[in-house]
Length: 297
Image (cartoon, rainbow, N blue to C red):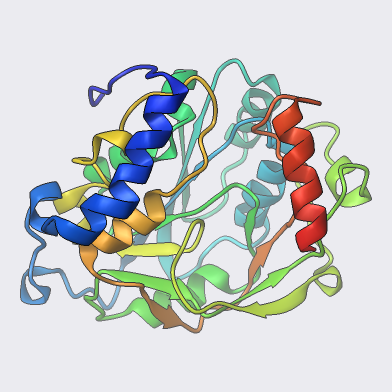
């Protein structure tokens, strides 16, 4: 396991992120903060027998994770081999039970890879992503979140789109999303126990995106193995006492000098929800963020 620092004061953590965003990114050379990128000529240019690793983090989102893992059971890939990596905490019983249930299922061309982390490491998403980047054996790695669903033909259309490609970063041009769902919505209440479920696609609307961010980063495996995921930026590799707002995707795009290239990938769905499971129930930050999300909606 990679070494990480532990629990800085919250103020220090926030200041280090601000220092990165407003000074490092603007004035310091990117080469100080990553290894050299392999040239496109040095990268594998695979056209068949493709492999993909999908990496997500789950903290108190077992109802969302159930939809995601179900999508691999309901719609396993035919034209690539898939590794599904989930970073989680053993203190999150809902997620532990969900992973245990799906471990009993064996969809074709899918390998489950559950990775427990101490809370301090889990709460800083860049730590898990960096571990996955440096250890992946796959041709491609997709950094995502557990509220993303890989529906019918998603993975096979991805396999078709990345054949022979060697750029660093791609993203799906379009996705289907729900409205901002309240905690009481039946879709969020449906998974009282671990099970295989299916979504109703008519409940989702088409949405276009213009860059890779957050849960939509598809990275060439040779690039991931060479530079990790913000591995030399200590503010994104420092353990935290609570889940931190994530700026790692912006930092990663700075490191590779790319906003990503869009791909026509079918069947990408997202469940949008007001309540954030990563914040303490009924805490002031949870209430404030819920109100902000309702206002934005």
